[in-house]
Image (tube, rainbow, N blue to C red):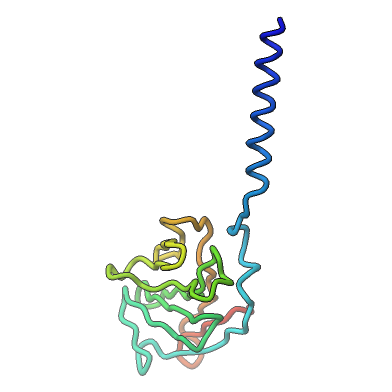
Length: 150
């Protein structure tokens, strides 16, 4: 009887220690609250001066917090992502870049990788997707509108 109670007590003790250690770990992947919310509202002409071919991308360094990447999926479908990596966005160099394959975005600081088609994480420590901006195409003027306030 004493040995059985001892084993149960030991298991409870170990479980409490493991739970406590998990509670102390810093979870950097709870949401986008650490990415500064800057006003994004611009329009480009993806079929003209700002040409973006299908299955291709273009970066707008002066937009968003650390730049906005626009990916053209097909003739009328676009995704726009904040280039700040959501894993540790306050790290100055936490910024995704397109790798040589052209379909993976990678942050060289934490080595998180994301699919360019949907911004979802595919590797590394990040568990949440890239922050995405709204897109509207075509607009009444024929351009692509990228914005963060509907």
